[in-house]
Picture (cartoon, rainbow, N blue to C red):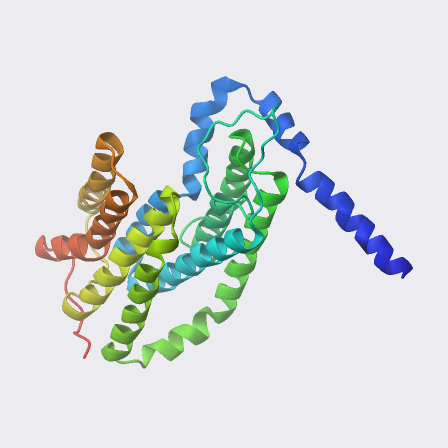
Length: 308
């Protein structure tokens, strides 16, 4: 009984700190309004847009095997975040002393930006695509940005980061066994998996609400699934091994320019959630199908052996 009482007290104390407006207010006092543009850029490092760009670069430069794993892990991360937000239903910070500098329409826990940033940059470091220092710099800054913007409690960002870390560790543990098992699967198996993913993504549309990030996730996920399936069947793109650095950088710049084009058009001209989802689907299709086809056409790389 005594131990249970102590645990209850500890939980209550932790809750009073982690979901207290004081840490948010302290951060906003430490960084004045002039820091808003800086934190807006930092917080974008935990968004679907950055995930899309990062995964496109991984595909073009490192190949499909690592992309497949990262793509699935990021989809699982988004699914976990959505389920927990709906299940917990914690309201956003609403203390009158807090200055809210960003729009947020979904429940507060866990922080989707902290979860996405931890999963993305943690996985990139774990798969040796970026230095290990990168997630240790980016994740705390993204967490800080969410508090500065007044949209998350300390407990929200810590929760998102811890969930993301757990997902990264689990993915690392399963990476090799999953890769070896999938190596023996036929193309028909991937058609089945892709169909199930598409059904799940499309079935989520009635439940998305007004959150732009949720619509972006569904759009990018849908375009990515379709693009990867068609690329696997018809292109089998392999990264270049002997392309001159200058030419490679030029082609990557061209790929990225056309990748962000539909996103910029919607950003400047506006559009409702379905239009935004469609723009992210087009961007993902370009990253997974259009750009590889262009690279092959321009002679940067060759097709691999077709899979039956």
